Image (cartoon, rainbow, N blue to C red; front, side):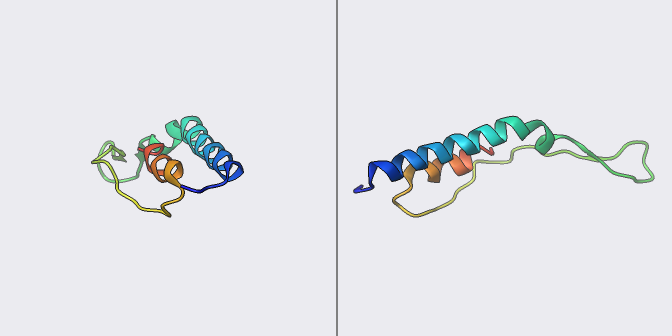
Length: 72
């Protein structure tokens, strides 16, 4: 792709960072949110619906995949 090796290494490190972030914070992001209602128990639950799609600059191929894959 003509990307300098230094920029490629930085991109891979950025991808590792996003994977690490979501691995460390997944439980908090996916936890049920209890809400007050007249019912005995109410909550919001986050469940995956489908794979997401996204686009980015063509010269960031790893980041393009990891920024969506890590949070799914």
